[in-house]
Amino acid sequence: MRLDKFIGKSTTLSKAQTIEALLNNQVSVNGVVVSKAAFQVHANNQVALDGTVLVLRPFRYLLMNKPANTICANVDQVYPSALHLLSKENEDMRQSPHSTALLKEGSDLHIAGRLDADTTGLILITDDGSWTFNITLPSNDCKKVYRVGLSRPFHAGIIEQFEQGIQLQGETGLTLPATVEQITKKDVLLTITEGKFHQVKRMFAAVGNRVVSLHREQIGDVKLDVALGKWRFLTPLEVTSFDSKV
Ligand code: URA
Image 1 (tube, rainbow, N blue to C red):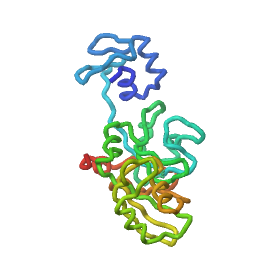
Image 2: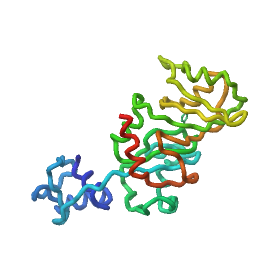
Image 3: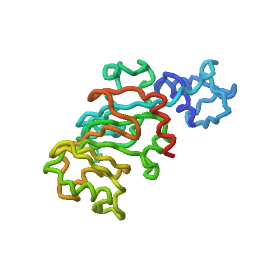
């Protein structure tokens, strides 16, 4: 890991403050002053700031109920990033340990498994890249449950078609078996294990219907339980629930 990244992950310094500390010769690795941000820190290295040995803080794992008109990228485009909602005011106080200091600016949090700008519901946020890999790897069979609003009444015949797999335009194989449960005339719960681009919208378009609202309720065993725009930290059990899918 780069030295500037190590400092970012073990202190509350911003990127600019980290660079300043490096240039001021306040940082040492194994007792030797190092000012190069790109210096590679290895597992057995001891990094110190002003003589105090630094310890990497643990990875962070959160869930959020993403509102419409937000995007799942780190950089704002037409819409703001959902990551902007990670402030104290938006924290769900029922279950979170109030540790918003963990969400300091300049952090490398990212969203594991994107939703479209107009889709609402459950997103998982972390700075642990290998955890994200487990969740998003198709072979890990991680189920995602969506509540889908349709423009036309749902036909039961679609249940079998989705179970057998749908041919999406531009894809080589069929979609993996999906289950559909009808809720109302035009509302269904869809469970899929893949995450192809616009998958849910394309699946219903392929059978002559159109998605008018889309809300993700569950990923793996993690269920959405906070209000729109709110977030909370995952429990340790929720974090490890994705391990067995590897
Ligand atoms: N499928 C879609 O079409 N859109 C989403 O946001 C998620 C799944």
